[in-house]
Length: 287
Image (cartoon, rainbow, N blue to C red; front, side, top):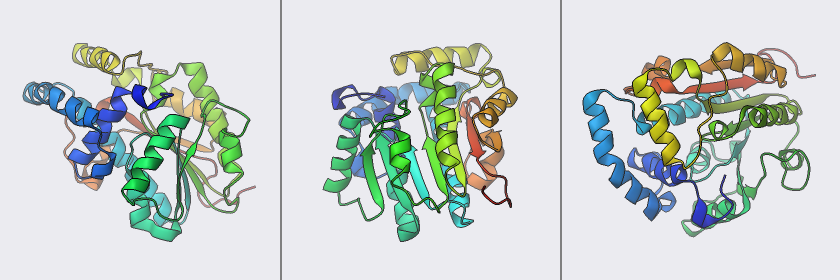
């Protein structure tokens, strides 16, 4: 999570352009750096596609579209009408979901100060911000204080179902930090009639083999830092999420949703899992 506009993660630029290149974003959210990086990496992507090796785009698209699908289902079922996207970066999700759901949805994009300001400026200059769509400063690692998640939740309607989304975030922190973050999310979401947490995560059991290890090494170089794999398998992660205050927790393999998503899953898509965790059981009343 970068603290100034100049040091925005390379993945934020690259993923921002990836969403745009696949028809999911707005030109206002494309940066020159993202366009350049996408062009530079295109030959490697083509080579990987020819050889059947995992690609960055495969898991980026799989995780993004599956998170979108799960959030859409929750909104349509009336379970969620407020969303906080933590470390939103250049994600187009807030803009797209406000377009799709209008006044039925309050969408808050949250990030560290400089990134939040940059995102706010980009959306405002392009006329993409509308009522019920905000960009705010948030420190996802803070338990208290004006920029904490708890303080942000105080400003929401306590009678409305609420979702928290983290995409491209948890694998850049060590395990104790992630567990503490999940506990923070669990405490906040338990304050609402329904709480939903959606995120991507990489696990040891889905990232084995020489090809995947080489891919992981490239990814670590790409993001200029270590990529953490916190858990051996889905069961370990689901148990940790339940211990953090979620009544239900399931990790989804995006490849199982290929039909619902209407997309071809290329190598690399199965290297990621998407977390769906809820703070109350379906059909139960919130206590």
